[in-house]
Length: 328
Image (cartoon, rainbow, N blue to C red; front, side, top):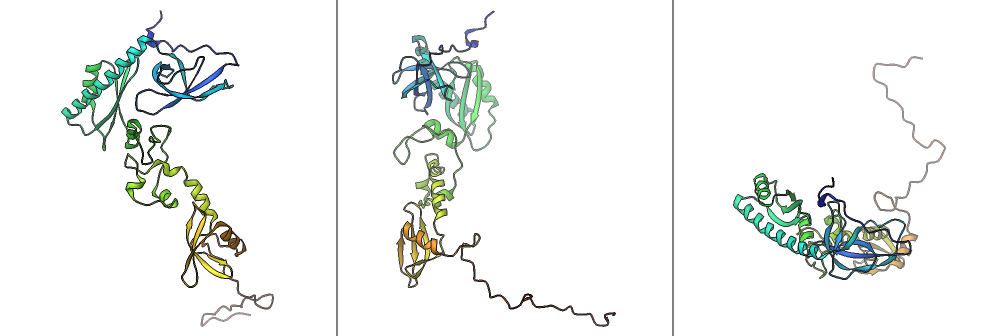
């Protein structure tokens, strides 16, 4: 016997001929959250159209955000989601009801959290399209005992309940918004993983160490600090280090500061005057300078003149202890 319809595998489109085009789209599963790349065969889709996407748990509805282009079908399918087909009228109605159910579940869960006095903040509720599972995303500073809350939610919705604790970065990723640059947040649009960010990256790029200017909506260091960090680090590695002496026009100048963005140096002269040196100048001066010690960054000291004779090292005589004589 065949199982229920929810247990059936999602129906895939038939493989088109090799000459068919592969359309790539941006899709999102809910309003206001990040977009994903997806592909489909056949007729082009329209912006804002509701489609069914192949997922592990079954077909899920998604909204088309825009077309990325049409390409000839490659040998291997791209590592992105697959759009099965446009949604039917019944599926569109079910999707609208699903959004209302998620809003109602969010309000109900918030009321239960306040009633039980749990120290947690609810972020979002997601319900699978087939109703087999509901995920409640929340943030909390410490571990939360939500066993009683789960029991209440199971009695209310008669489905599997998962409480998933997330960090502040993932919370901002879900809620979305605009950054200080005026564009949508990177984490809510294209970032898939959060790379480690340190204050050293801001220092390397000569950014003001003002928390208000280098922190994002999540009150953590900006993710975009990692974008150009390697480039700045490589440029600094090629430039003379602060404290090094450069011979510019027969005058010794000491490097005070590096400016990797413009590839210039601020140097100080013997009389205390400061000036800016371009890349061509410091490269020419650096090429004519003696090689530096890799540890100290300074030119090696001149070695003392060699002593005359083959065995120039002084001969040391061992002092004998009193009372002992050498036997011949």
